[in-house]
Image (cartoon, helix red, strand yellow):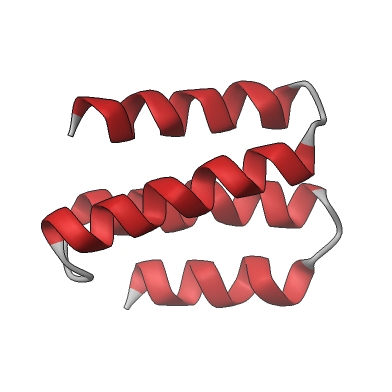
Length: 74
């Protein structure tokens, strides 16, 4: 679990550095890890999806950003 938290933090740093493709890659790995360890109804999974959404949004992929937020919300 701690590794996934580190991945999410790394993704955020990469996003802040405007390294969106790398950030998205790291967030996707974190999402997969949350799904495998906690399931799709966990708050951790929703948070990972929401964080990834921001990277997709900043990278101009608004459709994916919206889909990830909707998935996190529901």
